[in-house]
Image (cartoon, rainbow, N blue to C red; front, side):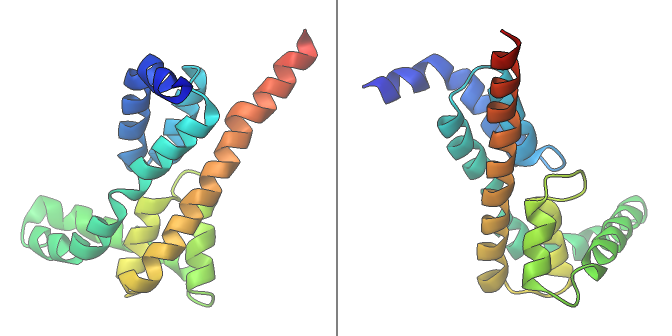
Length: 164
């Protein structure tokens, strides 16, 4: 009963955090910070943001190559696609030697330019099949989420309670 009341009290914030977690660049990192600022309990925020960040990954892995081939036929979008592929190759050079472990680290470290979207892009560019890439990306997102929960909930809570 308490679980449902908590969801009812925070449903708008949960929906927003879910949406933020689906967006490239912000991803789960932005969703968890948003949820923390809005006072959403950390376990609920973690679960919702994890789902929001992982939802687009299978679609990226399945359709990215086809979308890129389609967009390469047009002048303005061809330059954007080439730039994204160049960025993915640059990020991917760091993990060529380690492949799956490198992919995990790329997704797990919560810094700009990393995350599930970049991991899926790199996996596609380096032809890592979904069967291998999806669990590694999911584990990376889980790890990034735990790091962000600690940074967004635990550390500020300890800091502000020490100030009282």
